[in-house]
Length: 519
Image (cartoon, rainbow, N blue to C red; front, top):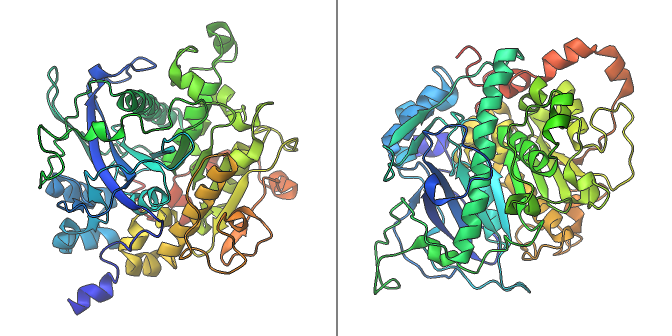
């Protein structure tokens, strides 16, 4: 055990620091029960699945929520294949599977939802899209940290082949199926963009399904949750079968336009950008043809989703990966700014972007990230009519530092990727996300005393988004472009460089980006 402790000094997660305990339920709903805002891109994906993290009543004693979902053996095998032979993480997964099987997320399964102390008596909601190699559990420490401060976090499982493996349960009309990891080249080419477009079509459609599911769950609509969620003790569910979805009836702030926060990491951040833009900008068929624009997702203008995504919608982008946004089919959309920059929008105060140090040092990609965050993405001299986005990088962090991997395996991440203080990195991200939500008028709890590092950092935590606050290792960035560097690096070279896979451009072989460049 001493060897294991040295290898992995944090085999579990630290406690969340917010004032609320955190509950969790798994949800898997047949697509047939929902109203998709656009046609299904893959009819074999018969369900939509996500984990819910939420503020809960204390004192619930349920069996633990395992970090590796069921079926655990299938997930561990898939992760080992995804990580590739020879990587440090692959060796860990191969030789110490029992360590993985028993890691649990510090949440209360199926616990009662706390009544919301907000003016509307509803909890704010954040939807978080995972990156390559991710699942609904991969960002659990970030999601739980946010929930402990009074947010219901929805973490979908994307069935586009970006997870190591995904399982789709059987419905009344379809059989169960597995969705294996889909190895897509990371070099820009028509084939690469076509495949990433196919994945984005699924991801955007799934986020639309999640939105409709949230509306129906809040309204108490009769939905079938295929995940059993059977409590191990029935002391607070006597009189009938347990219905996990009923916990959230009339409790979610999802009907008010602009209320939902949209967030993601890496490919999930790209998904978030494409999602809010696709919903907000809806050209006519004539205009789309004129601009050679092929929408990947086109909700009806009178849909509830179209009303939800507004210039006030908070958008959180963690280590945004730009390659999927450069498809020629969606070039027209690339040129559009994020909805927050619309004339009636909140400007950059509704946008948060946080980079790892690894992505910050990927210079060509940093410039493309700045373009995504600017008011004029295609301009070398972007106008600045509105407040700048909240834009930072965390020193001594790797691409995977915003996921659970750094928290669970700090020895490996430090030795292989030079990543330091994994828990603090996620804490800084969570603090910034909470403060941006506050500035957007969303009621969340004060930043916990444990997370504030000095007396000067007030409980409203304005310091975390203040470029002049001088928080250690929290480096402010701007969207200004380095004109000399732009001139030095030709357009063709810049395009080829920026569209490399995350690991290829950051650290050769880094997981959750490109682990196997020749897969």
